[in-house]
Image 1 (cartoon, rainbow, N blue to C red):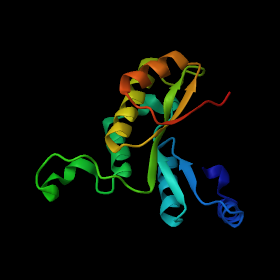
Image 2: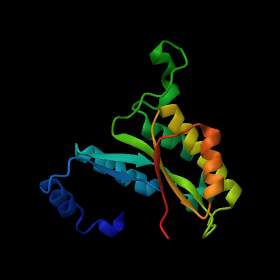
Image 3: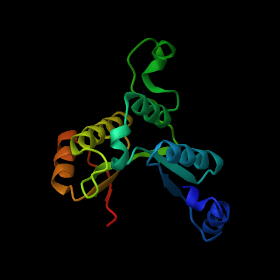
Image 4: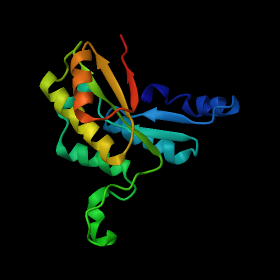
Length: 164
C-alpha cells in the first residue's frame, strides 16, 4: 500500500465526490492488513479484508492465524468465554471486516511450497466459515486444487481472481 501513500487521501476524496458509496481495501500481508484496517477505521465508507497472500504462505504461523481471527472479530473470539457466560461461542464479527483474503494458491511463481499454500488456504477458509464471511481468492495456475479445496471446505461465497 505504500505505493499509494503520496496521493491516497486525495484519491479517496475524489472517489467519494464521484459518488462512491463503499470501498473494500484488501489485506495480503501483516503490514497491508494493518493499513487496510486503519483506513476502515478512519472512513465510514471503507471496509477491510484480512488475509495472507499465497506468496507469503511459507511465513504463516499460528500467531498470524490468531491475529487474523482477532482482526475479524470485535472482541478476539473465544478468549471471551468468561464474559459470555463461560460457554463456547462463535466469534463476534467486526463490522468493518467484510471478507477473509487475500488467500489462495499461486503455482506460477511458487514463492511458497504448494503443500504449505494449500494448508494456509484451508486455514483461511476455516476462518471465513467461523466468521461467516466471504473469501477473496487468488488462484494462478492452480485451478484444480483451488476448486477441490473450496468444495472440501463448503465455502461458496467470495471472489475468485488472478493477475497474469
